[in-house]
Amino acid sequence: MSRHMKINGLLVLLVAALAVLPLVFGLGDHKEEPFAGADAEAETAITEIAPDYEPWFSPLYEPPSGEVESALFALQAAIGTGVLAYYFGLRRGRRQGEVRVAAATGRPGADGGGPAGADGAATTATASGAGSPSGAAPASGGGVPSGAAAGTGADAADGDAADSDAADSGGAASRSRG
Image (tube, rainbow, N blue to C red; front, top):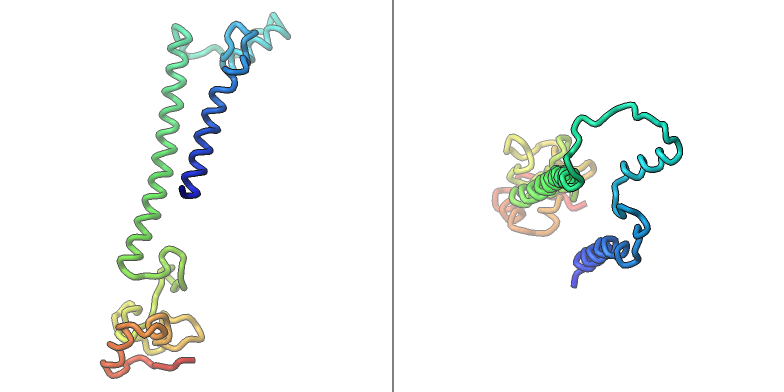
């Protein structure tokens, strides 16, 4: 069982306990309406303190019964939950999309995992000039972190196919290993 599954299980148990424990321990049994809302509790407290108190405002809509009022409140909570879930899902989806695009294009800095160029996207200089915007090999080491010569990035260090292609093409980029 993964760590996330354990945490989710504990959270579900905690929510269930918060829902069941007030019923088990009889919290609110001494009241006429044991699970009345905060507005009703405040109204009761105010009438006990000052019986002649007059409210400043009256409600725009008075539901015909407590059940309708509860249903409207549940609808309001469901709409709010839906808006929040949509927002967080959209954010996560965009982040996952950025990671997929970065993986598909081979840019190692789009997810924050590598050196980024001036525009925020990762650029690497290879012998074919794939890291430069014009497609030509950079003459002054553009797109390469300062202090490194062109061709000494990740492609040159690991000896992959890009290095052998550069060597076959006459070594357009410098090959210093320092």
